[in-house]
Length: 266
Image (tube, rainbow, N blue to C red; front, side, top):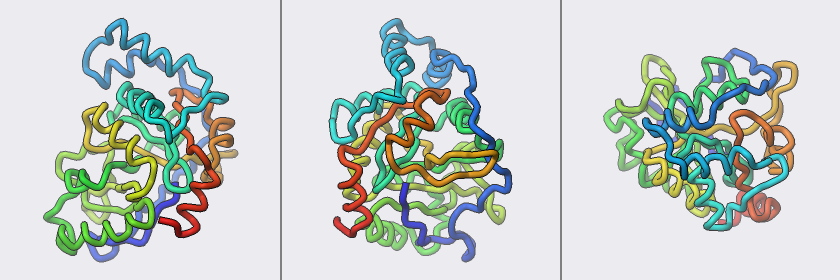
């Protein structure tokens, strides 16, 4: 998921991007899990018969060969429903792809295990421009919130932005990292013209949350992190049968996405 990493905010005057973990990722291993139990944890209640049938649509699909289209409203709606049920979604973002999922602690833990990330791993938080300040501790911002948002808008015109910000007090601890004594989050916001904005907005509304958890898709070989995958075919080969299962929501044209976001087109 290509992002702008040039920081537009610093809580301490030194902070830029999240400090990399020293723990090497392990080779991904499939983890058995009960999809219904995970969804019921997210919903806080038992699933209805119709909900169980809807959830089974995601888990019985072979996502190593099947994919949805980011350009199709119906496919975006289906993927948004998957997120609300606790099912992760690989989706187009900028010129590449992201893996996005419900921020519930149980879902984050299941995805972490499915990707073989270390126990110390924290996902980034993905949200839309209008919800940014719900996640940020405005009192800890330097410069002011107004200057922060103005600078953010300028950068969003060129594509997705990723930055480290002080977390609002109500952001759960399993989504934050302490940096110089400050609880922080890595915040990702899709670019203004990014086709993923409609999907993210739908998923936020469907899940009833202010932000989603997200990470970049990359492989691990013998405990070593590989390159970020930016083609849906490669993601399907690597993660099509991961557990928890993940929906594939692809760019309509990967070539157009790369030209648009790497070639300077707005």
